[in-house]
Length: 350
Image (cartoon, rainbow, N blue to C red; front, side):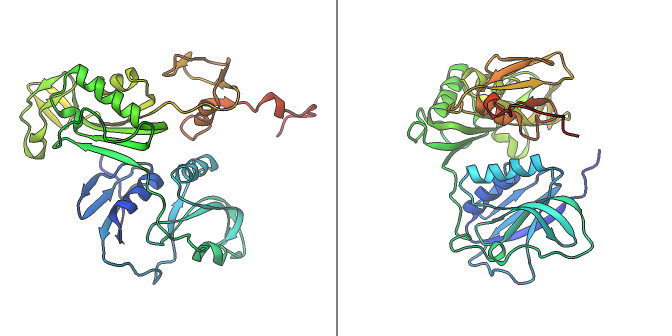
């Protein structure tokens, strides 16, 4: 399949690190390329190539009114807004706005250089233009365009020594990124110790991102061409995920694992692999009932909970919240707490 047509946008930015932090959260993906004077994001949804170019100063406004995304449904909208809010990046919600000859539900956010981003769902056409967004939203209240809080993070790259102790206090980081770290010749014990350190420094709910070249079997000294020549070891393709789960992380999943290998050496396919997992969140509140709707007979999560098709299962509030997200909403029903149920219901909603 050929690569889809992608819209390309290049932005001048005054602080590359802060802009990367903003767009990492907004787009929900890691940058595809990072250099000291450049960064590029290439999300598949939407099919976009976003380049960030450092500049001494950035003039605000000009011909640009705003940028943004139209999302397919309210669940995707809420998920993106919650991502930004959790990272300390303020947004402004507007319900049922009449704007641009359409009715929309949306939120607004400013990037670190003051560009206005609109994220909305289309609720229907109108015959009149509508009042549109307020001046407060466009210009922002005092302080709106100040740089958002950058998530506290630590990153390790393959060309750096692996520390015995991650240089951070326990439960102090929002994110840890391991870029090529697992392509160093680490023993199973050293990998386990590293994952344990990452777990120690991440706050509850904090994210670990792993970028690694994996193989159809373990390979030592693969002698790959070009920049990949720095790779000194290739772990078996299921080992990184298994290691994260063994260290107690939850929500582990593959973000990138293509059918076609990047390299083949002596019949062994090797693939670029990206994955994420999360430190277990702090549970608050009571249990919430959820029901798995199918199509499989059952699913099992990292905590060992079994979701049998058509059966209620009580889960912590954090798990229920995750199942409300766009990735799982079609598979699960999340029930409101019994205490919130009205005493009588006369009819089902149409």
